[in-house]
Image 1 (cartoon, rainbow, N blue to C red):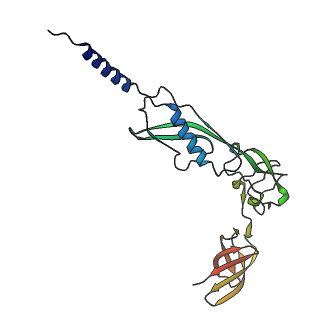
Image 2 (spheres, helix red, strand yellow):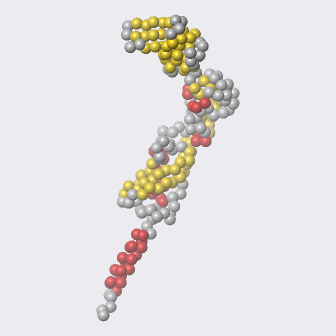
Image 3 (tube, rainbow, N blue to C red):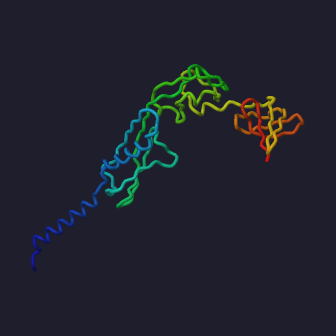
Length: 233
């Protein structure tokens, strides 16, 4: 029986080596982390303050096939803020999906109270000031501009030196339940003014019920200054 040639042995060895190498191929972590960094840099470009991004480890002993086209993304409703899990999908040649932890930290200026605020108190310019610190350590809706707070009413008592979030404030009431109001009814080519009493409390632009002097109850839009507007067809 003829003996196998050296060339045949070499061919068999090369085939086995290629098969073994393919079976143990792994996705290199570096391109994955680079894609996440690129994505988060793009997502945080418009954030106020100084942004720093830290991408977590991607296991080097993963069982994923090497990818030629990576795409990073965040789940719907999640923004690049604080600790997040970033998805990475392979688009080619073999589809797969993985998640990698990351952290986005933002240092900037945010509002704090200069003194205690009572519930319902209207915020004046001297009631707030800007302080520097880590925005991502504050509430997600922390305010960064005094104009966002001045003229608003505190929803609850706020202590001095407390960060001010959007959820801490509300529009001040334009009309208050029991208040005497002016009801202005408008229609094509006419305007009628009546006196009434507000049956509900409402902010500027919100709906309000009013009892007119005749006893009729109407509904309109509250406006600052104790006015309720009704637009007729």
